[in-house]
Image 1: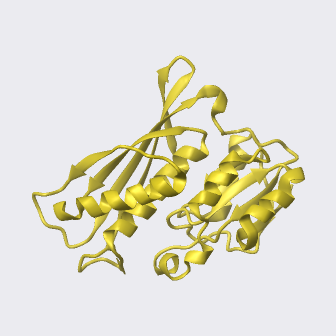
Image 2 (image 1 turned 30 degrees about the vertical axis):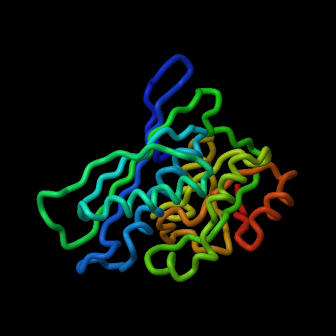
Image 3 (image 1 turned 120 degrees about the vertical axis):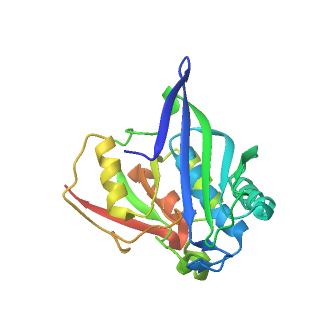
Length: 238
């Protein structure tokens, strides 16, 4: 099941809601990973917006739940705006801050809200002859900061969204490649027995540093050209 909530909105349209949460990553004494809060917001917004856009939705707004501190609000918004800029969109930002009590660890929630036309929803549209690949490497924690060259860039994600050869895209989260692949198959009424990939199948994908794609075999050359060294085939046994 995809990590997007769909609600009836208007004739032929649905409201789409996606979210991401981050904790113990930031600039507070108790944080496990030390990084500026604008980077935290950038990656959390990346997850929520990639989830939203990958199902065919048009993003409309971002909501922040700031449990860090009131004086971090502008930095958080700056991180979200960077995400939007790399995706080629401009969104209003609203939210709330815990300003009554100090916290010793950073925590942030990001919700992305959008709309999707029923006929444009990109779920369960992968045909049997499709091939699969992972774009980018699954990374988490300090590895995300240490190896930015292994992270699938957002402009590349936008290119894949627009590619006529790509059927479905699923951002890879904390449950790893294999879990997301099984979710994609289930959405298409299929079952896989085994798969192999040069990447670890069960490692956390952290803040969606990689994406699982199903695609038309005839378009493989172009997709490989777009992704370059970030293209990793997923070999499937049926």
